[in-house]
Length: 320
Image (cartoon, rainbow, N blue to C red):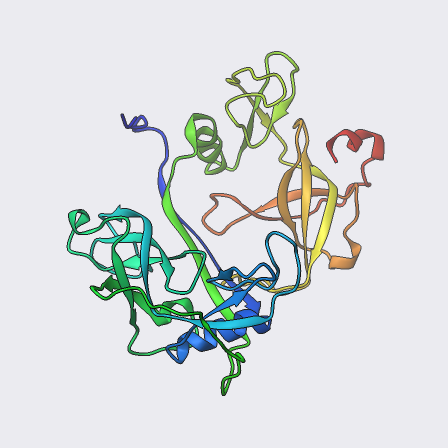
Protein backbone atom coordinates (compact mmCIF):
# COMPACT_ATOMS: atom_id res chain seq x y z
CA UNK A 1 0.00 0.00 0.00
CA UNK A 2 1.31 3.47 -0.92
CA UNK A 3 0.71 6.25 1.59
CA UNK A 4 0.08 9.69 0.09
CA UNK A 5 1.41 12.57 2.22
CA UNK A 6 -1.07 15.26 3.28
CA UNK A 7 -1.34 18.13 0.76
CA UNK A 8 0.40 20.58 3.11
CA UNK A 9 3.57 18.46 3.15
CA UNK A 10 6.10 19.63 0.59
CA UNK A 11 7.22 17.41 -2.29
CA UNK A 12 9.71 18.08 -5.06
CA UNK A 13 11.68 16.20 -7.71
CA UNK A 14 15.30 15.69 -6.75
CA UNK A 15 18.25 14.62 -8.91
CA UNK A 16 21.55 13.48 -7.44
CA UNK A 17 24.15 13.17 -10.18
CA UNK A 18 27.90 12.66 -10.08
CA UNK A 19 30.22 11.89 -13.04
CA UNK A 20 32.72 9.50 -11.46
CA UNK A 21 36.10 9.62 -13.24
CA UNK A 22 38.65 6.89 -12.63
CA UNK A 23 41.88 5.66 -14.14
CA UNK A 24 42.22 2.04 -15.25
CA UNK A 25 44.86 -0.51 -14.36
CA UNK A 26 46.28 -2.90 -16.98
CA UNK A 27 43.54 -5.52 -16.57
CA UNK A 28 40.55 -3.19 -16.72
CA UNK A 29 42.19 -1.21 -19.53
CA UNK A 30 42.62 -4.39 -21.59
CA UNK A 31 39.04 -5.51 -20.88
CA UNK A 32 37.40 -2.25 -21.97
CA UNK A 33 39.72 -1.72 -24.93
CA UNK A 34 38.93 -5.30 -25.96
CA UNK A 35 35.21 -4.53 -25.98
CA UNK A 36 35.91 -1.67 -28.35
CA UNK A 37 37.55 -4.25 -30.63
CA UNK A 38 34.70 -6.79 -30.18
CA UNK A 39 36.86 -9.01 -27.98
CA UNK A 40 35.81 -10.23 -24.51
CA UNK A 41 38.69 -10.82 -22.14
CA UNK A 42 38.77 -12.58 -18.80
CA UNK A 43 41.56 -13.23 -16.33
CA UNK A 44 42.73 -16.60 -15.06
CA UNK A 45 43.41 -17.12 -11.36
CA UNK A 46 46.18 -19.26 -9.89
CA UNK A 47 43.51 -21.88 -9.22
CA UNK A 48 42.56 -21.99 -12.91
CA UNK A 49 39.22 -20.15 -12.74
CA UNK A 50 38.45 -17.60 -15.46
CA UNK A 51 36.81 -14.41 -14.16
CA UNK A 52 34.67 -12.27 -16.46
CA UNK A 53 34.58 -9.33 -15.98
CA UNK A 54 38.27 -9.57 -15.06
CA UNK A 55 39.62 -8.18 -11.80
CA UNK A 56 43.16 -7.27 -10.84
CA UNK A 57 43.28 -9.27 -7.61
CA UNK A 58 42.16 -12.80 -6.85
CA UNK A 59 39.04 -12.49 -4.64
CA UNK A 60 40.09 -15.61 -2.72
CA UNK A 61 43.87 -15.16 -2.30
CA UNK A 62 44.35 -11.41 -3.08
CA UNK A 63 47.14 -12.39 -5.52
CA UNK A 64 47.84 -10.12 -8.50
CA UNK A 65 46.09 -11.32 -11.65
CA UNK A 66 47.55 -10.61 -15.10
CA UNK A 67 46.93 -13.85 -17.06
CA UNK A 68 44.43 -12.59 -19.65
CA UNK A 69 42.43 -14.95 -21.85
CA UNK A 70 39.84 -14.47 -24.57
CA UNK A 71 36.39 -15.97 -24.01
CA UNK A 72 33.52 -16.44 -26.43
CA UNK A 73 30.84 -13.78 -27.02
CA UNK A 74 28.22 -16.48 -26.41
CA UNK A 75 27.03 -17.83 -23.09
CA UNK A 76 24.30 -19.11 -20.80
CA UNK A 77 21.84 -17.20 -18.60
CA UNK A 78 22.34 -18.20 -14.96
CA UNK A 79 19.60 -15.99 -13.50
CA UNK A 80 17.43 -13.07 -14.60
CA UNK A 81 14.83 -10.45 -13.66
CA UNK A 82 12.34 -8.71 -15.94
CA UNK A 83 12.45 -4.91 -16.20
CA UNK A 84 9.02 -3.73 -17.46
CA UNK A 85 9.78 0.01 -17.28
CA UNK A 86 13.33 0.97 -18.34
CA UNK A 87 14.70 4.19 -16.90
CA UNK A 88 16.81 6.88 -18.55
CA UNK A 89 20.35 5.68 -19.19
CA UNK A 90 19.58 1.96 -19.08
CA UNK A 91 20.78 -0.24 -21.97
CA UNK A 92 17.44 -0.52 -23.77
CA UNK A 93 14.46 1.84 -24.09
CA UNK A 94 11.95 -1.03 -24.34
CA UNK A 95 11.20 -3.61 -21.61
CA UNK A 96 14.05 -6.09 -21.21
CA UNK A 97 15.53 -8.64 -18.82
CA UNK A 98 18.49 -8.06 -16.55
CA UNK A 99 20.56 -11.22 -16.88
CA UNK A 100 23.68 -12.78 -15.42
CA UNK A 101 25.46 -14.49 -18.32
CA UNK A 102 28.29 -17.00 -17.91
CA UNK A 103 30.16 -16.62 -21.18
CA UNK A 104 31.57 -19.78 -22.75
CA UNK A 105 35.01 -20.27 -21.24
CA UNK A 106 34.27 -18.24 -18.11
CA UNK A 107 33.56 -19.42 -14.57
CA UNK A 108 31.75 -16.27 -13.40
CA UNK A 109 28.79 -14.32 -14.79
CA UNK A 110 28.54 -10.90 -16.40
CA UNK A 111 25.56 -8.63 -15.67
CA UNK A 112 23.90 -7.00 -18.68
CA UNK A 113 20.59 -6.59 -20.53
CA UNK A 114 18.85 -9.21 -22.66
CA UNK A 115 16.64 -8.04 -25.51
CA UNK A 116 13.57 -10.29 -25.35
CA UNK A 117 9.91 -9.79 -26.36
CA UNK A 118 8.62 -10.58 -22.87
CA UNK A 119 9.32 -12.46 -19.62
CA UNK A 120 7.89 -15.67 -21.09
CA UNK A 121 10.76 -15.67 -23.59
CA UNK A 122 13.42 -15.68 -20.86
CA UNK A 123 14.56 -18.64 -18.81
CA UNK A 124 17.53 -19.75 -16.77
CA UNK A 125 19.80 -21.86 -18.94
CA UNK A 126 18.90 -20.17 -22.24
CA UNK A 127 21.69 -19.51 -24.71
CA UNK A 128 22.54 -15.92 -25.60
CA UNK A 129 25.19 -13.95 -27.47
CA UNK A 130 26.60 -10.43 -27.43
CA UNK A 131 25.01 -7.80 -29.65
CA UNK A 132 27.74 -5.26 -30.24
CA UNK A 133 27.05 -1.54 -30.32
CA UNK A 134 27.42 0.11 -33.74
CA UNK A 135 29.80 2.70 -32.27
CA UNK A 136 32.23 1.48 -29.62
CA UNK A 137 34.43 3.66 -27.41
CA UNK A 138 35.90 1.29 -24.84
CA UNK A 139 33.11 0.96 -22.28
CA UNK A 140 30.73 -1.71 -21.00
CA UNK A 141 28.10 -0.11 -23.26
CA UNK A 142 30.08 -1.42 -26.25
CA UNK A 143 28.00 -4.50 -25.51
CA UNK A 144 24.65 -3.05 -26.56
CA UNK A 145 22.88 -6.02 -24.98
CA UNK A 146 22.58 -9.79 -25.25
CA UNK A 147 20.17 -11.52 -27.62
CA UNK A 148 18.83 -15.11 -27.82
CA UNK A 149 21.15 -17.58 -29.55
CA UNK A 150 20.48 -21.15 -30.67
CA UNK A 151 24.09 -22.32 -30.98
CA UNK A 152 25.87 -24.84 -28.78
CA UNK A 153 28.40 -23.81 -26.11
CA UNK A 154 31.92 -23.17 -27.38
CA UNK A 155 34.36 -25.93 -26.50
CA UNK A 156 38.04 -25.84 -25.63
CA UNK A 157 40.10 -23.70 -23.29
CA UNK A 158 40.03 -19.91 -23.59
CA UNK A 159 42.93 -18.67 -25.72
CA UNK A 160 45.69 -16.66 -24.00
CA UNK A 161 45.71 -12.96 -24.88
CA UNK A 162 48.42 -10.34 -24.39
CA UNK A 163 45.89 -7.59 -23.69
CA UNK A 164 47.75 -5.35 -26.13
CA UNK A 165 45.67 -3.08 -28.39
CA UNK A 166 46.34 0.11 -30.30
CA UNK A 167 45.24 3.28 -28.48
CA UNK A 168 44.31 1.54 -25.20
CA UNK A 169 41.61 3.03 -22.98
CA UNK A 170 43.28 4.36 -19.82
CA UNK A 171 40.38 6.02 -18.02
CA UNK A 172 36.60 6.21 -17.91
CA UNK A 173 33.90 8.56 -16.73
CA UNK A 174 30.93 6.71 -15.25
CA UNK A 175 27.85 8.94 -14.75
CA UNK A 176 25.97 8.05 -11.57
CA UNK A 177 22.45 9.46 -11.35
CA UNK A 178 19.53 9.05 -8.99
CA UNK A 179 16.29 10.96 -9.58
CA UNK A 180 13.28 10.65 -7.32
CA UNK A 181 10.53 12.62 -5.59
CA UNK A 182 11.55 13.85 -2.15
CA UNK A 183 9.20 14.75 0.69
CA UNK A 184 10.84 16.43 3.69
CA UNK A 185 8.07 15.38 6.08
CA UNK A 186 6.08 17.39 8.61
CA UNK A 187 8.98 18.78 10.65
CA UNK A 188 11.17 19.93 7.79
CA UNK A 189 8.18 21.26 5.84
CA UNK A 190 7.50 23.66 8.72
CA UNK A 191 11.23 24.48 8.82
CA UNK A 192 11.24 25.37 5.10
CA UNK A 193 8.06 27.44 5.38
CA UNK A 194 9.69 29.40 8.23
CA UNK A 195 12.83 30.00 6.15
CA UNK A 196 10.62 31.60 3.49
CA UNK A 197 9.68 34.10 6.22
CA UNK A 198 13.38 34.61 7.09
CA UNK A 199 13.00 32.71 10.34
CA UNK A 200 14.89 29.61 11.48
CA UNK A 201 12.78 27.18 13.48
CA UNK A 202 13.86 24.02 15.28
CA UNK A 203 12.05 21.49 17.45
CA UNK A 204 12.74 20.75 21.10
CA UNK A 205 12.94 17.23 22.51
CA UNK A 206 10.49 16.95 25.44
CA UNK A 207 12.95 14.67 27.27
CA UNK A 208 16.49 16.02 26.86
CA UNK A 209 15.40 19.56 25.83
CA UNK A 210 17.88 19.66 22.95
CA UNK A 211 16.70 21.87 20.05
CA UNK A 212 17.30 20.26 16.66
CA UNK A 213 17.89 22.49 13.63
CA UNK A 214 16.89 21.48 11.04
CA UNK A 215 14.20 19.53 12.90
CA UNK A 216 13.91 15.80 12.27
CA UNK A 217 10.51 15.04 13.75
CA UNK A 218 12.06 12.96 16.51
CA UNK A 219 15.00 13.13 18.87
CA UNK A 220 17.71 10.73 17.60
CA UNK A 221 19.05 10.35 21.15
CA UNK A 222 15.84 9.77 23.08
CA UNK A 223 13.70 8.36 20.26
CA UNK A 224 10.82 10.67 21.20
CA UNK A 225 8.69 12.61 18.72
CA UNK A 226 9.27 16.36 18.70
CA UNK A 227 6.58 18.97 18.06
CA UNK A 228 7.51 21.96 20.26
CA UNK A 229 8.74 24.60 17.80
CA UNK A 230 11.53 26.96 18.88
CA UNK A 231 12.81 29.90 16.87
CA UNK A 232 16.61 30.13 16.98
CA UNK A 233 19.27 32.52 15.70
CA UNK A 234 19.44 34.30 13.41
CA UNK A 235 23.02 34.76 14.62
CA UNK A 236 25.33 31.94 15.46
CA UNK A 237 28.88 30.71 16.06
CA UNK A 238 31.29 28.88 13.77
CA UNK A 239 32.16 25.67 15.61
CA UNK A 240 34.40 24.11 12.94
CA UNK A 241 35.02 24.58 9.23
CA UNK A 242 36.86 23.44 6.12
CA UNK A 243 38.40 25.32 3.18
CA UNK A 244 37.09 24.17 -0.21
CA UNK A 245 39.65 24.34 -3.02
CA UNK A 246 37.88 22.36 -5.76
CA UNK A 247 35.23 24.19 -7.77
CA UNK A 248 31.94 22.31 -8.05
CA UNK A 249 30.28 22.00 -11.44
CA UNK A 250 27.35 24.44 -11.98
CA UNK A 251 28.15 26.24 -8.70
CA UNK A 252 28.98 29.90 -9.23
CA UNK A 253 31.28 30.29 -6.22
CA UNK A 254 34.95 31.06 -6.63
CA UNK A 255 37.43 28.92 -4.75
CA UNK A 256 38.80 28.87 -2.18
CA UNK A 257 35.81 29.36 0.08
CA UNK A 258 34.82 28.17 3.55
CA UNK A 259 32.08 25.75 4.51
CA UNK A 260 31.34 25.62 8.21
CA UNK A 261 29.31 24.11 11.01
CA UNK A 262 27.32 26.96 12.56
CA UNK A 263 25.60 26.69 15.92
CA UNK A 264 22.72 29.16 15.79
CA UNK A 265 21.91 30.84 19.08
CA UNK A 266 19.47 28.63 20.97
CA UNK A 267 20.10 25.51 18.85
CA UNK A 268 21.39 22.25 20.25
CA UNK A 269 22.92 21.13 16.97
CA UNK A 270 25.15 22.86 14.42
CA UNK A 271 24.02 23.18 10.80
CA UNK A 272 26.02 23.64 7.60
CA UNK A 273 26.57 26.95 5.88
CA UNK A 274 29.00 28.83 3.66
CA UNK A 275 30.97 31.72 5.15
CA UNK A 276 31.33 34.91 3.10
CA UNK A 277 32.21 38.55 3.64
CA UNK A 278 35.64 37.67 5.06
CA UNK A 279 38.86 36.28 3.53
CA UNK A 280 38.86 32.50 3.73
CA UNK A 281 42.07 32.45 5.78
CA UNK A 282 40.51 34.66 8.47
CA UNK A 283 37.63 32.32 9.28
CA UNK A 284 38.11 30.73 12.71
CA UNK A 285 36.35 28.69 15.36
CA UNK A 286 34.22 30.92 17.56
CA UNK A 287 33.58 33.50 14.82
CA UNK A 288 30.17 35.11 15.28
CA UNK A 289 28.10 35.16 12.06
CA UNK A 290 24.68 36.14 10.73
CA UNK A 291 22.72 35.02 7.64
CA UNK A 292 22.74 36.80 4.28
CA UNK A 293 19.53 35.78 2.56
CA UNK A 294 19.20 34.69 -1.06
CA UNK A 295 17.80 37.13 -3.60
CA UNK A 296 14.36 35.55 -3.38
CA UNK A 297 14.63 35.52 0.44
CA UNK A 298 13.80 31.83 0.78
CA UNK A 299 17.01 30.61 2.47
CA UNK A 300 20.37 31.92 3.76
CA UNK A 301 22.77 32.16 0.82
CA UNK A 302 25.73 32.38 3.21
CA UNK A 303 26.75 33.68 6.61
CA UNK A 304 28.94 36.72 7.28
CA UNK A 305 30.73 38.06 10.39
CA UNK A 306 28.60 40.12 12.75
CA UNK A 307 31.51 42.14 14.12
CA UNK A 308 30.95 40.79 17.65
CA UNK A 309 33.82 39.41 19.72
CA UNK A 310 34.47 35.72 19.14
CA UNK A 311 32.48 33.32 21.29
CA UNK A 312 34.25 31.62 24.16
CA UNK A 313 35.17 28.00 23.42
CA UNK A 314 33.22 26.71 26.42
CA UNK A 315 29.97 28.08 24.92
CA UNK A 316 30.11 25.83 21.86
CA UNK A 317 32.49 22.96 22.67
CA UNK A 318 29.57 20.54 23.07
CA UNK A 319 28.42 21.36 19.53
CA UNK A 320 31.62 20.46 17.67
